[in-house]
Image 1 (cartoon, rainbow, N blue to C red):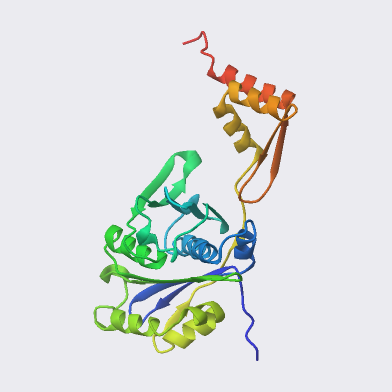
Image 2 (tube, rainbow, N blue to C red):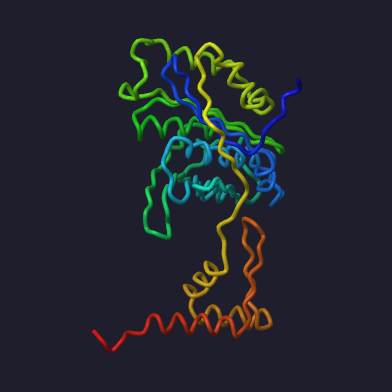
Length: 299
């Protein structure tokens, strides 16, 4: 029977014999929606796909309320790389660049670049942010270093992307208190690493999740949990755009109205949703802002 490739899905699993937990993410339509938003050079497109898969991958073993994002800012030709996955499994991402991009596009060569992982609900003020050291050329290696430093738990991460798919695999050794008899199998972690290292990028992109896990770990007592669906989605809204316009202030909004025939148009870079405000709209929201900022007489 032919295996049907299930796309846009996150699988959590356990390798019970070795005492290792894992997450496997496979993106298809969701990734193509993001990749199709701009004419990305192939190497940048693939890096963005890896970051998008990684943003979902990192949600696999945490309790998430809000979103997890991976963001790179750089003073070089690669100005910005951003990928995000929400607690509802909605994904979005983009990159900003100017030619020529460095060849090869290695993170370790981007002097002055900063990469951060942000977790939490920004609107509620609940955020945790950690910096990722960019001493490794590839994103997977940089994220492995982040886990070694922040969690003191070894992690193995594989990422691959092309124009059609973006895939990520993450393995972590369970702590001794995890309830699994990993102590009695001292070779478990090294054995799993050896098996994982036999997997090439082409196989990672081509194999269905169940095929891939069986191909690698069929002797390790794989326990596969229910899959979690993923999809492209954007958190933009008219209310958020209104808040942005209020933050600009009356002078800038009035200048935008004058320059664009009494209309302000804002287009979301992630999903291309258009938000249009005429002079009446902007006067209403700016007046609301002024009223909210006015002190009251009652104390």
